[in-house]
Image 1 (cartoon, one colour):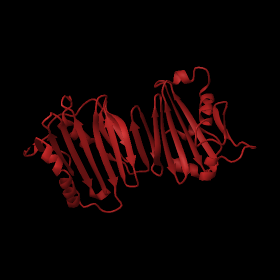
Image 2 (tube, helix red, strand yellow):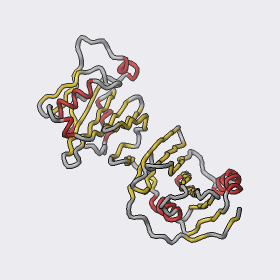
Image 3 (cartoon, helix red, strand yellow):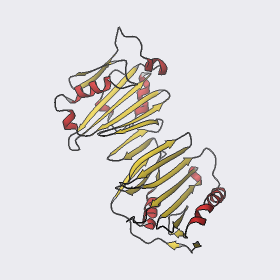
Image 4 (cartoon, one colour):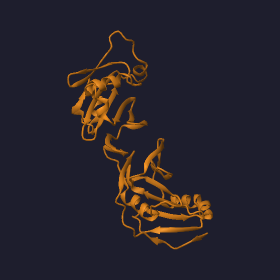
Length: 307
């Protein structure tokens, strides 16, 4: 094992990249990398990515409630990386990164490489660490990729938080926290919550097949009627609208009782050029709850249902 002097990064930025935005941060990754897993708690977030062949990226970040000490963070990082340094054939500190960043390139005897890169932003009380994995025959340049990640990183702390992965992108007000996702063939769901209220956002591929025998609103009403968490009202297509009406003779549904939410608002859009349907539904408590959706990027002027 050897530790060389710092190596400056001079490689040009990769041209084939996608922006990934998730829970307060965004950065650029190779277009063939996709989200493969995530976890979150009150402070910390973790995302994993893979390509068609292997695991490629682990990233963890946190917005702390307390001030973060750079010296303490660095000391903990160096202590935790000792075992990694001992097992590597070569360890190279990487220079030329944006301010606040530190990175190391580890090369192993079997040809694998690993890059660890971390940054601390004391003013924002924010810390992030990347682990990039490279197999023996990986075509990517580790040094260029870590520079791409560091240079493209953005923190999003404003009123709207962007979410972007795969082929979808949208913004949700900051008050709404991600509760769950569901990525299935041809369908993606993001489910958010705010004080017991729930916001559901679906993206459907192959819209032409879904709408082959029915109108957009007829299809949407039928789909919403079968969704757990949204059972209770009757969803109907009424002209160009989707109307959610209370069932007069049906007992209160468990989902309504648990959340004390009895109001529903929904909207649907068909993007013919992308052959995609976007559908959203907001299960809420009071008429003024709709104010929380100010700025929601799926166009509330397309929304329907009783407020």
